[in-house]
Image: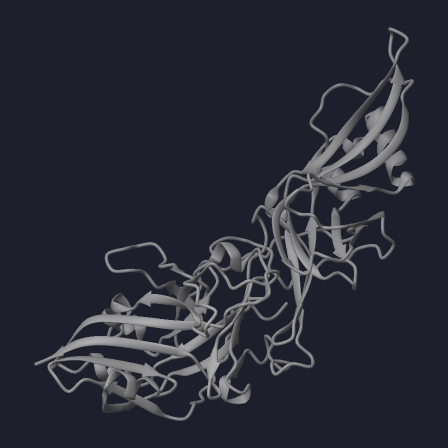
Length: 452
């Protein structure tokens, strides 16, 4: 794992663009990466400004205790491949009924239930293998005594992060190949190794110390990991209600054969997490990683993207914005940030339903979230669909609160990190490639102000 909360500041600027406005008292400043709207809007040049846009790789993305077991792979020609394996620690059965002495072992199974989330191509057969973890699954403690500016706002307790993985046996306990009808599939069952099942059955039947407590059991059995096959084409979400069942049968006192089971399940959801990896080779973002966390659009033909699971966000910097809002002769009335997205023709990789924005400090650490005026919760910008005639879809943020705060010390050298909502940032592979025109991202900041 990368050094915790280490950030690298990189300074780089795209070519200058034009800040535009009406020549009357109420004027519309349009800060964007082009000036194509000037003629249409009848604007006149007021000033020169820049929006600096980059794709930024955040680290320390917590993926434990999310309630979602994410397993699979997806591929995008622009941003590359992502893959997710899910680790989990199990606890002993809670059923108190003893296994009869004449009972015999039948089978060992694992059952998981889809949560209806998928991202990628679900028309192809998917395969998942189950492996036994051989290393203790541990939380990463954080230093709450450190300066909050060095800790992401979304990390407040010990967690397991997306880039963490634990050793496991290369030989699978079982595999399942299936057609991912995730909207209708009730559950997915794996038949696991009979030798392990027999051993667990024997421990349960005799009351062995290894199954007398969760602590004892986890010293013997560290956990499970679900691993997607190399040929998988979709990320699929499952509920964290995972059941490893020891099935057995016996003849009861009534002379009839009876079937029963003992169930091992996740005992502490903090110890279930998704290990999410990426492979960007062959794309313009091949060098984007935790060691080289930022690539500017000047190096990618104007392309920027953001992605859940891996923690990629679109970073926006407005170098001349402070001078605008600091002008004592200007009163800001309205400000909107508009981010355009190409109309996705791929129903299997749709544009995100909404976006949010983190406020990042000078070391590009997210220290807060953009809120709407008079609000304390994160502002969410829903996706507004485009049309079939070429109009792009878009996300619109109310920026008045940010402009009002930008002169404060806490916002000195701040930038914006456009992201998926945190609920999706930690649990999905959802992705957005920002629309572009003329080799530049289609991002615009409109400001309506009164000049005295």
